[in-house]
Length: 532
Image (cartoon, rainbow, N blue to C red; front, top):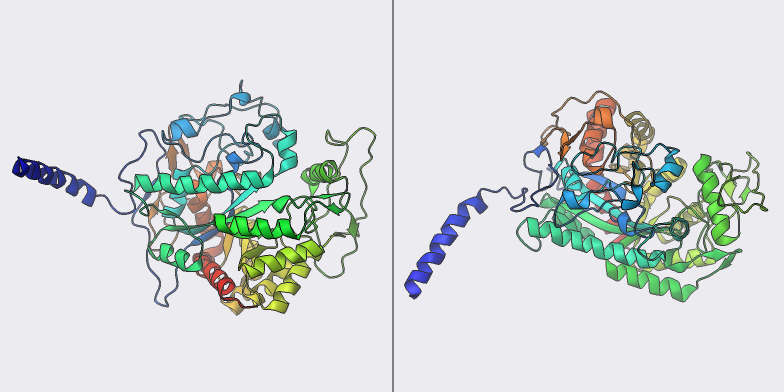
C-alpha cells in the first residue's frame, strides 16, 4: 500500500515538475481566466551594473489605492480582484446611464456629455489620459510597467476629507487617517495576491520594502520595490480652523509612530490646504479657485499672499468665485499679482513634525509646501546634515533643486508630455552631472492629475533601453491601447511614454532615468544612516 502511494506521488510530481520548470521566473504560474495582457516579451534585467549600482526607472509619486480614499467611490474600479479584470474594471453604478452620473469627472474636466460607462471588455471611453474618476492602476498594467524597466514605486496613501464630504457617493469614512490605514492594508493584500500568482509568499514581483537594504535586494532580483508614503491635507488630524491648530505634539508623535509601524517611510506635511503644520504652494487656474474655496469651507480662512523674500515663488492663484462651494453672502478675495508667496510657512508644530520625521529616519516630501515652508524645511535639513528630502513630482520651485542635491536628496519630474519633461530634465542636467544623480518621474495616477495627451512617433514594438525586453501595444479585453492615439491612459503605458522621452531626449536622458533607482536608494540609505 505504502509502495503504491509513494509511486503515485512520484508520478504526480514528475508530471507537474516540467510545467513548473518551464515557466520563467517573471511569468505567473496562475492568473485569473479573464485578465489583462502584459504585452512585454523578455526577461526583466537583474543584478547590478559593472560599478555595483542597481538600475531601473523610478515612479516616485503614484496612488495605487485611491479607490479606498475620498469615501471609497470617487475612483471607480479596483486595482485587483481575485476574478480578474472582468470584476475589477467595471464602472460605478452611479455613472449610469451613459456616464452622466460621473459628477466629479464632469466638474473637473468640464465634460458634461457623459461617457460610455462599460469597462471590461470594451473600455470604449475609459481609462483615458483625461479621466479623473476611473481606475488607472490595475495591477496587470503596473506589472507591464515593471516588466518595461520600472524598479521603484512610491505609492502615496492619500485622501481629502473636504472632497469626501462634498462628494455625494461614499461607502467609507472621510477621516483621512482612517483612509490611510485602509489603503496600507490593501497594499499588503495586493502583495499577497501577486504572490499567489507566482507560487507563494515572497515569490511575486510586487515587494513592499521598509528599508533601502530590502529595496536593493528586491531590485537586484529584478523585482519592483514598493515604498509607501503619505500625501494628505490633514496629516494626523493636523487641521487648522481660523488659524488655530486642531492637533498637538502628542498627536504628531503618535501618528508618526503608527504610520512607521504600517511601513510608511515618506510623507508630505501639507497638501492643497493650509493646515496646522505648514502653508501650501497654491494651485492655479480654475482648480486653484476651487481649492481656495474648499480651504475656506474647511478652515474658515482663505489663502493669504505676500511679496516673496527670494527668487522662489508660489504659483499664481486662480479666481475663487463664484462657485458652488462659496456661500452666497461670502466674497472671495482678489490677489495682487506681485504678491506670489503664501504668508504661511512652516509652523512650530510643523518644525516639530520635521524633527520627528528626522528622528525616525523618514524622508520628507517638500512638494506642495509653500516657498516659505519648503525653505525652512531645507534650512532645518541643512543644519542637521539630513539627506532625506524628496521632490517627487515637480511641485517644488525648481530653483530649490541644487539645495536638495547638496543635501543628498532626490528629485523627480512630473509625468508631463515628452517635450515638457525633456525640457525640464535638460535644464537640470548640469546639476545631475555635478552631483552624479539619476532622475525619476511622478506619474500621479489616480491622483486627480493630468497625463500626457496623444502624441505620434512611437513605433511598436520597441525596447525602452538597448538590452530591454520587447514592448508591444497593450491589450485588455477587446481594447488595445497605443500611446500615439491614447496618450497616458494608465500606468501600463509608462514604458511607451519613456519611449517618447527617448525619442525626444536621447539615450543619455534614458540612462539618467535608469539611474533613478540607485539615486533614490542612496537618498534613502543616507537617511537611515543619519545621526543627530
